[in-house]
Length: 284
Ligand SMILES: C/C(=C\CNc1ncnc2c1ncn2[C@@H]1O[C@H](COP(=O)(O)O)[C@@H](O)[C@H]1O)CO
View (cartoon, rainbow, N blue to C red):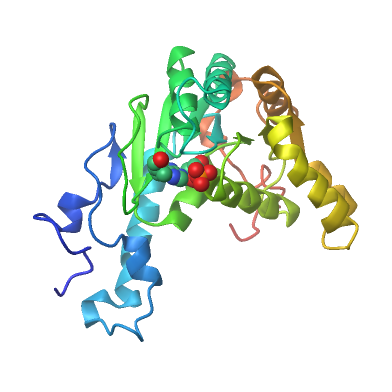
């Protein structure tokens, strides 16, 4: 096969099989290798024809950025909610993420998630129940289940790293519910970008003190004590006991920094250089 399309299944052309750009709800399960897998596998082990080289992939990656920027540019004030894909409806963690989504939408924020099941579904569901806008940024996965049913605007991505840029660029803070490796990846990416000043005034709130305390203790007792991070970095994290507290922390931090209320949001000035703490004329 000479194209970069994942093989297997009756219809494997990217335009047909891979959902791209703005979408409403989800689609069929992915079959064969994903685009991320194709990008990351070693060409030394499996030489590829010229049309599958990384240079060609750069064009596809560029296209995915353009489509994502186009779909999300006018989102307005938004908060991303992360958490386990495995959290079951009815579980306390599910109901808490749902309440976070509802409270955020009642506070005037669009709720953005990974568009999947579990805590993502819960937050999207809460956003709809609160009368707000619910967004899913999906990812092509080997055993993808499609987007959850509570999404107004869904955008599917082939590449994890493109999708991660979208979460940070189009939301003003993160609420992080209990989760596994995917959730930790999203959490630590945000913390690193805040620590290094790549994003500013960006609240990161951990929901569920019981779940997160051992991690926060380890960060303080090991990372700080052994000089791996600065003591002030511990304040990059805020821990909430309840959905109400989590939403208050994120909303108050955002309000103090940039977004007094939804009415004050002006798309003309969305994410200006000053928002990023940059002087006009700095490279953007
Ligand atoms: C594992 C299952 C479905 C996976 N579907 C996902 N869809 C969208 N986003 C996902 C999915 N799985 C992980 N993510 C991202 O990572 C975070 C959750 O990962 P964790 O390892 O479960 O903590 C989440 O915030 C997403 O952005 C079927 O059970």
